[in-house]
Structure formats: structure tokens, C-alpha cells
Length: 199
Image 1 (cartoon, helix red, strand yellow):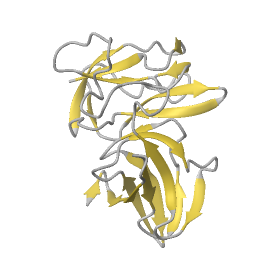
Image 2 (image 1 turned 135 degrees about the horizontal axis):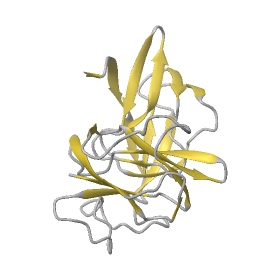
Image 3 (image 1 turned 180 degrees about the vertical axis):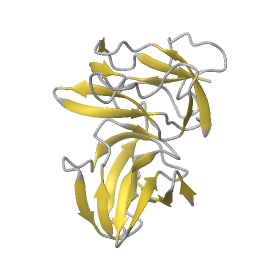
Image 4 (image 1 turned 30 degrees about the vertical axis):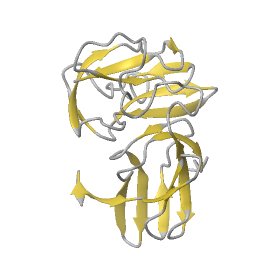
């Protein structure tokens, strides 16, 4: 598989009896830019890159895995990993503090009153929302812009830790269009607050 000039490499899965899923390394190499704890991932989401010999691969969450990162996220940007080493654990939404319902309703959080045919990406926790990678930089996305699964769309800062938001979630289409930006750049947000709408 390939996309955006970088080959895609699917992570391996190991299901746990409690409903969580471990994503395992598909090869030996250097894991670059692991997602932070609290990040929401679904099938097709990127969870970093893997440098293996002289090649780099985009790591992708395989079918059958979705939820919030709770274990395995590293504090370092680059980590040496072995084949089949557990990289991160995902717990289903609704098993943690953010109650969004099951995967069939992910993207349509209860009480959000979303327009028909749209899906939402919400704040994973309380914090400060940023729509651009740095002050004065171009925003990650704009209204009317097309997006694809795994694409970065914003940041939520929690106690000086930055959590990247991506367009992702079980049942989300491969591609969509940004129809509304509800998050205010530099504004405080609450867990579960709708930040983006897509169609």
C-alpha cells in the first residue's frame, strides 16, 4: 500500500478480553511520532511512522481497531521497536471518561444536535484548542477543504502536553469535507465538545 509518497504499513492487532485492543509493531525499526495518550484513532488512522533500514512507512490502524489511546504512548519522539512489540492500547469510546456511545454512533455524539449527514470530531479532554501548528502558521484545515483519514486537523493542549487531533473514527468515510469549525483558536474546550463537522 502507498499514499502521499510514503508506503503504508498496517499495524498488527491483539484483542484483550476487556474489549480493548493492542496495536503491535509490524516490523523492526524506529517508531517516529507516536500518538499521545488520549488521541482518538480508528481504522485508517495514522499512528506515526516506522523507519526500517533505509525506508520509511506510514503506520496505519487496521480494520477492527478503534478507540482512545490509553497505554503505550511514548514521551519520546523516536523509539526503537521490535516485531510484534505492543505499541499502544486502544479502549473503546464509552469505556473511558468521554461517553460518545458505541462505534455505530461515533462521530454523532449524544446531545450535539448535528446537521443531518455530518460527523463530528470532539475534544478528547478539557484543554486549549489550537487550529494551527504554531502562532501565525496556516491552519490545519479550513471550511470547504477536503480531508482524508488520519489527517491532522488541530491540537488540544492539556497541561503543556499537546494532543494532535486527526480526522478519524470508526465508520468515518475515507474522504470528507470540512463543513464547520466550532473550535476557537486559543480557546478553552471541554471534553466531548464538538470542534469540527465533516460531510
